[in-house]
Length: 605
Image (cartoon, rainbow, N blue to C red; front, side, top):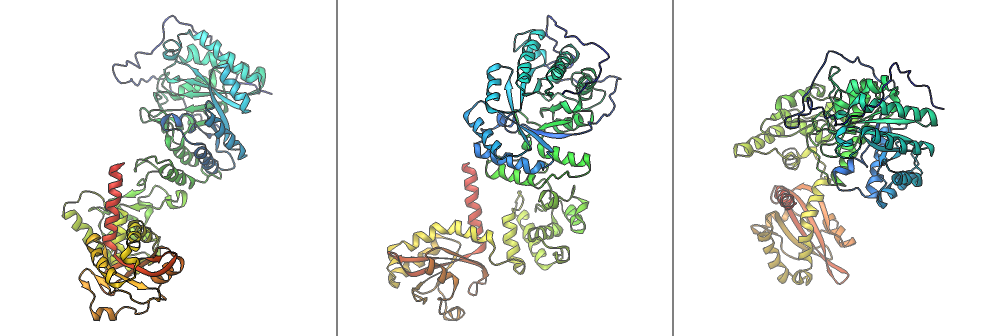
């Protein structure tokens, strides 16, 4: 049964006009839109219950290449986890027009989640409604253009004709037990009391007639909405909500705000809607959407928690997972300074800020981003960072507890500071990358780093794998004849600047060739420093036994006194391993090659 609605004090019949009302005093077109105010002010009237809805798979897809079915299912699952079991993210709308769209809906329905509920979006056409029936969805949005810009200039209809056509398709949906969500397109350029309120009154009559809810989505299609309580209609959001809420008799729980960011107001307009009596805020992940985008879901989640004063079982760390998915899976670039999801949103470059952070991170962090978003406060190193910035980088990278943190006066920090300053004295203008910081930290503070550091080993393997495979397949190397192998090893140093030592061991783990460095054979004194039997060494044992390339951890070379990494590979005659080729690589030179390689790839892209 439908509940009783507000008793209206006044009648608001539709006002058919001969010429479209284009509000030229507010929208001159030849100039920027004008923001007008009046004495009448709307008091705050927050909705008793507020929630979030989603349009990532509808409006969001109009801003990018279409998602695959798997990507939609993945993102829908993130959304379910983020909103939690109480349905803070209550609904998500989908297109139904393509086979891929319908398959995505079916796959998401199979997950069996209560929230977000899957709803549809259609044009006000019977053939579109038929698709909703076939899919078995309980609610659909229906596009109902509201402004004379659309009714007269696009649809070529009168207001009465447009309203009658809209009401016909809405009634058919309700007759079939399908909840209708009316999208008042371009509401912020519409004649509110001449069309929107009369239309909303008729919609509420249908609600009472069928007992099936009719929701109204207030669409700020061009981002014209103004938050101020004295802003005039149709741009003033508080007055739009008051008109529908009080004069058209639409309950707050039946109102939803859908905005766009053409004038940088998209999120603040959405929160304003909550504060003046609208229950639902329509959003999209990262704010993606047509032209400038929709209210960002992550911002709505944060402000929901702020307004409610509790999490309501929201898991905000999922925001970071969503951002990572967009970067890595969808290959979407996210501005580094975009709040909550940008790579540097909680990163400081200023040394004085870093010094404060070292003392207490609350001084310069908006909240505990590590706990709430799984994003620890970070520092980007430049010539402005100082020793405090470098110390904070080390402490954050190593995730050191307060009592174990490195002080900015540590000798290693001072060595790194000297290196950073020298970079800028030599004319550098870019920030120091995390990879470069890692190199210097390992060099000057090796005691803090695990020698099996994953990043270093992966980089060494990526840079060196094809090179060492080429050598172990060279017929001269495969021969295991030292006289044929040694000329090849001598040539290695001319081809690769980061290799600092090369040798070949036989199948018994003994030296098969001389040990070569850039200076030629190593001296007898240096050779005495090395093992004579390699059979128990990982660089020999792993390739010999499993036939794969092996990368060691990082170490300080006994011969060159430099930080190094060893990469080794099996030498095979047929399927038999007959020896192992070993290259020792200079850490810093290897990292430099890796950076140059990455830069070339970025330029190609």
